[in-house]
Length: 273
Image (cartoon, rainbow, N blue to C red; front, side):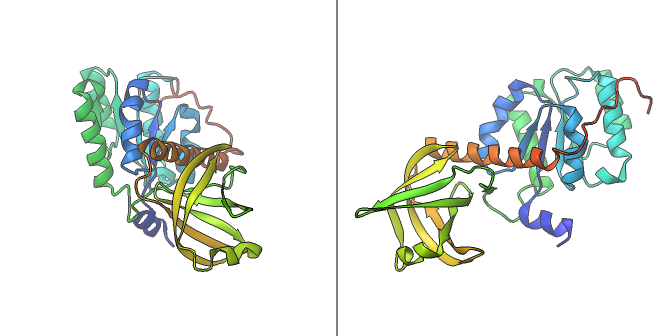
């Protein structure tokens, strides 16, 4: 499958780089609820490694922190001029650029994802972000963001039937359901089962009560995989917790991906481009 085909199906990753706390507070919960896959990158030194591992992504940079304006200008030029990052759509969200700085950035940089000032107002900034994400089809064909639970050894579900407790691992999770790792010895438990009324979901060693509808049981690598949907009426607070967990797992996976790559130590404030 080509990168273009992957993007059409699974969408594009969205990165917010060195953004202000004000902006993060504005967008985080709303983007989680709208099911965009986005990441908060707090240090520019990781940016090139992340973009290298995630082509065809969308990257909103704030040139207000860590580097001088000229340093950010130089970093973005280096991204624009390197074919490795040619599929990345770069935009600027700034908390205080002067008009002369805006003019310079727009004149010399390729900013396919646009440029906006936070001072334009919360609603206008959020509309700008959503319009840009939709323009570049950030969601792809999928409706829900899903995370693998492999790095969370505590993830699982358990419930009791009669005097027997059943406990199984959760393989992955979205805001609408989970995939369950069903050992061969427990396959019979799901014969004819359409739901689990009183189930406990474990995420990061914390327990949450909910009900599941069983939609499918299929063969897996070491047994079977159960596809279960959260029962309608799940509390909003729990739904928010699940979405935050998904975002956290994806962020962990992202940084694990680049863990062995050296950080970018280029002094962009001093180089001439």
